Image 1 (tube, rainbow, N blue to C red):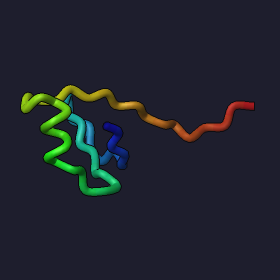
Image 2: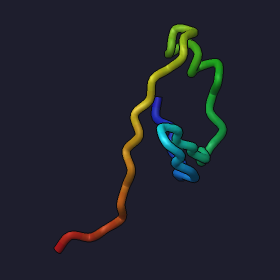
Image 3: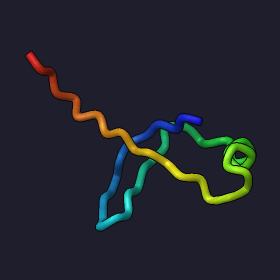
Image 4: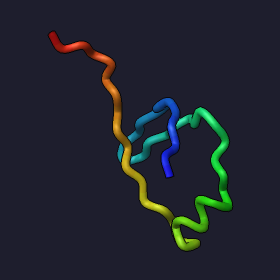
Length: 50
């Protein structure tokens, strides 16, 4: 499941993301087998390399 949004805060090892859309919590629970899901965060830097 892909969730997209904006990175709003980084404090120590805690990252806060404001999502673009409300997630389907039921589907998220099903995919994570009712356990705490793991995530990976890819940060786009927006630079153009020439």
